[in-house]
Image (tube, rainbow, N blue to C red; front, side):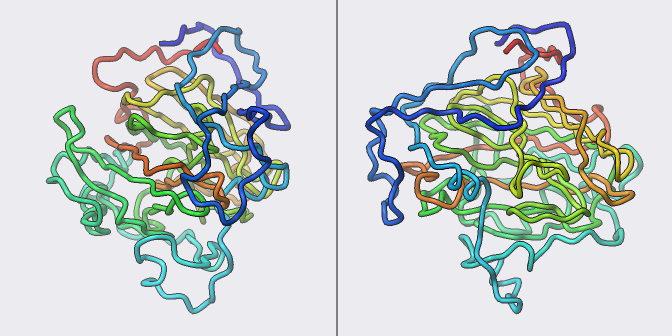
Amino acid sequence: MLPDTATTLLLEQPETRQDLVTAAPDVPEALGNTAEAGQVDRTSIVPQTTLPSTTLPSTTLPTAVTTLAPPVPSDSQRAREADESPEPLESDATTADLTRGGVPPAVNRDLWMYQAAAPQSKVSQGTEQSPGADRIDVDFNGQSSKAFGAVTQSTLESEFGVPFKYFYNGSQHLSLNSDGRGDTSLRQRYVPTQSGSDIVEFLNLPGSIDGSKEMWLSYQVYFEPGFEWVWGGKLPGLAGGSYVSGGSSRDDGFSARFMWRPNGKLVVYAYHQDRPSQWGEDLELCGTVATGEWIQITQRVVMNSAPDKRDGIVEAWINGEKRLQRTDLRWSTTQNLEVDVLAYSSFYGGNGPDWAPSKTTHIQFDDFKVSTSTAGIDWTVEGQTPSRSWVSC
């Protein structure tokens, strides 16, 4: 457990994000496009971690144990590979094309957009929502174990209590299983591909939950032993409006997914209106996480008060310790936009083979909660006491 500080501080982000990993001299400049996942010997690579400069006190951080570090890409590669970059899809693509297993070839998110919609009947665990009610509250314990490929859209909708719309459905990579704690959890496998791993991503249908100017998300995550961080990958987060991702730019939506980076570093990968490039911006959480232990992730997103105001907020906690606070964001330049999307989005990538792990890895997820207040939010895994104050970096 990292030490706490009593002072609430603002974690400033550098204008240019430094690389988190520096490869050893014997690392090749880049992997060829024909390189097969797992053929690159990375065991001699020594990862080095450089944390961003902040206003927080300096102290030694525990570093997640890893034997991997990817080759360092060029600036252009980093820009191109900062997010998923699918090729254009023909405009007559069908829903079946987009919901079959694996990554649909040549999908363009801008042609298959998640559009904000007029409110429909609001659903929360099968009941009509009331102001302040939990939007989503699911622990999977009502489900029996299901093998990979047996978790369907109807399974997910039944558990989360909302209808989902899919960009990509790699549901063959999802299972429900006993997680060793006497609970059932959602388990995802990440099979290496030429661009990282297959994308598993689903979002509630527009208008299916009541939006709010302020929303909280919490869930538990377990990076299984042997998990490889490589260059990074996506984790679930909050979003709103038309859900901006994939390098697109729209003023009527945003996203704030979590993302893992090398050596167990976590960030909020934010598509806000003033990000420095077309890709999401890394808003880095203080400290690192390790494999082989359950952690609780908590996120708070507050919309900017007006289209021209840079006062939107994102905050993040790990096991009840505050690791990120930004209060200067414009999530939208559209009036009255709200936080109304849970974006389950998880995969390695990137769009090149050096983003792929050398073997199949796994993450488990549990206890998803989305709420307009902290009343329904879990701060820690069972048996831990939250401090809810800044950790020292």
